[in-house]
Length: 120
Image (cartoon, rainbow, N blue to C red; front, side, top):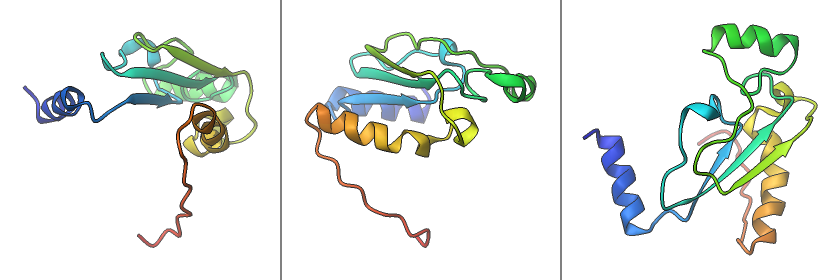
């Protein structure tokens, strides 16, 4: 068994992971969300990298193995944005920050945002 898989199973069995949020997943139809953990998918239809959106998306998919906007098997929630201007059409993780903070707070998760100064 691979060390990463062993660690994943250990964490899962100890109950240390409550959920897995998949942000702008590349090739979402090619993998499953971990079992026994609530999985949520956050995708953008205009994502150049993961949703093959627009002419640049078509070109990028020639280089990165291809990806389409699909559901990840095993997720219980799919949050799909239609369009996002900037961040490779919504692919970059920082494009989700404010949405995720609001979402997590709405389900009772305490969120503390600590600014990163780039020196650590």
